[in-house]
Length: 243
Image (cartoon, rainbow, N blue to C red):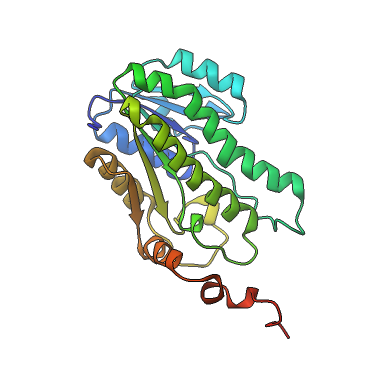
């Protein structure tokens, strides 16, 4: 897909990766960028002041609101599902409402967006969908349960979406990346990759017609881990191994 002259919609556009997506799309010559967030007043001033940027107030978990947004943005050819949450709640012992909200945002919120915009993309020649997945779609670290489970579900959802939309010639891309240097990971003293590099690679993948983009060693190693047995990958999870 050609990014130049495309019309893109970016969810979670007011911070982190979303803010970088908006900037990079503008740099690559996108004709229009719908910048979606709950409060457009929190958008980067440089974006809200650009005539190519259309602020959109939207909570992606609100299916009715998403449907209205799709009706008002009928020229979209590239949908970037970037909005997310990070409650980091244990799934067995944690607060169930927070676990549920993690799924509502990552899984059902993303599905709301795809269901609403799939007909728009079809009407505009097929276009593309880029969904923010994670290295944690494939591996789990103790204590990150709600996030990893939601991202794993989103990976499966993205695969199903890809199959369903192939007939309308929509390119469905999944982006897997490890820890990225955004406000979501601000409290973690771990190696992080630059969001600008991740976004550039993701949009390069869209432009090249890729269906999957892996960025960084963490994502590459996580995919390799799929070939390992649970006993190899999570030895501490084998009953009887704890003292």
